[in-house]
Length: 154
Image (cartoon, rainbow, N blue to C red; front, top):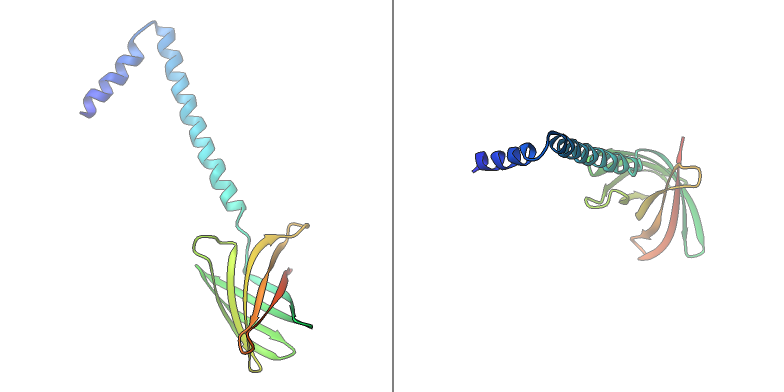
């Protein structure tokens, strides 16, 4: 069957005048090049949309009428997050994940001084194009939910 398709395509290019055949071939080449260009552009945009979570972060937390600040160092291995956080409550291990369907969604947890904080947020870019993270923070032991915002430390 493939032979018949090749013959039909070949017949299309050889029918008509030589100029028509040349123009059809050029048009097909241009469509192929345009398609490849568009695929490359989509790949570059997807790569440019990736916002790094790896690094040091300064996190501002507001729960009820209390405010706090954490400093976390986050590492990533595929979709898994690990690291450490330090605050006035001490130092603790961080674990979490990047959403499998949306790499801008992250969730991580760390415990310190009998309190477990679970962060759920979205990565974005600040006005200066630096990574920014914001969302909700839950104090697990008390079931209270607040807000957080985080800036990556350079």
